[in-house]
Amino acid sequence: MLDWLTICAPDQTEGCVQSVQLIYLVAVLIGTVLFAVVARRSRDLPTATLTLMPVAIAINVAVGSIAYALRLPIYLDSIGTVLVGVVAGPWAGALTGLLSNLIWSILPIPGGAGPTAAFFAPVAGVIGLMAGFWANRGVFRLRADDARVGGFLALATGIAAAAIAFFVIQLTIGIPDLGVEDPDQLLANQTQFVVLALIAVAIGVAVAYFSGRTTYQLEGQPERARRYLVAASAIAAATFTFLFFRLLFGPAGYFAGIDGSDPEFLGGANLSSLAIADPAGTLVAAALAVLVGLLVARWASRGEHARLFPVWVGGLTTGLVAAAISAPISAGVFGGVTGGGTDALVALFRNLGLNVFQSAFAQGLTSDPLDKTISYTVVFLILGALPITMRTMFSRGESTVAE
Image (tube, rainbow, N blue to C red; front, side, top):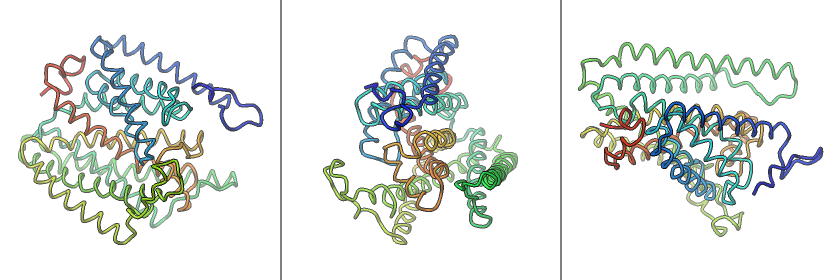
């Protein structure tokens, strides 16, 4: 199970790790020990948490390995990490994520018995930290008419503005090629790319700040907060539905890659006919998104259902951060190919002319926000199904998830 930890010979490239990669893995192990010490000192590891963590790790590894075996374009390997981060604090969540990936890397199951999971352990740790952060910000307990939802609405608007700005930049100025071989030209292109990215981020920050100070200033206006939250829930649900449908049924989506060419996958089944060619695929996805958006608007307008939107914002931002951290690892260590279903997306972006890093980053921006939003939603539903006495058994349960 640990054969892959063999240090590569000078001319060896497979079934081993480079010396610098081994140093990286040792650093990850040391970091895991430090996180355990910090979590213990911060009182994030009482008996209840230590009992929950193995269950959470098992959930991560089991569900993640199923997603890996099915080559899904998402991971689903952080549900347990988010759960622990929410009820037990960020340090316990980070430790759960780190241990999940390290344990997974030595198990003879899909995605395991190899270096992939271990190299992405820091990403899993950051996911646990962010889950604890967002829980402390109240995303799992906000009422639909709470004035604080204005901050989440402003953040979501800022993210949307940054994405639109970057898309407009791509259509007008264009994104510089980061795959050129000339060192001087590469440096110039990297500088231009960073500047363009910072411009898009600056636009998003400005939109979030000013909208939060004006449109989303909801103090003393509970009904207005509720209306805004219902509308935001509908728009977010429609957007996620559109993206998820395209991710699965698009002409270059998940089912398009199951063409029967691999006899070991699903018995050689050919499911490529489920992929819908454009423009019909786009129209179907758009129609389904509108339908889901209307249904969610009706559902969110009742009771406290609209409170899911802050949870989605937490998942979305966690996914964006995870994508930013995982892209260099994916591109630098694995060349963008990790053996999972996300490889198809990397190949798609490569065919569109992006280099390895750009393709890995684009794949992360496609998969991670959806994946983490789903994980946060699942955890929200789990917490809602648990009695309050059980939720408050944990160190942060009373302050982050209790009603």
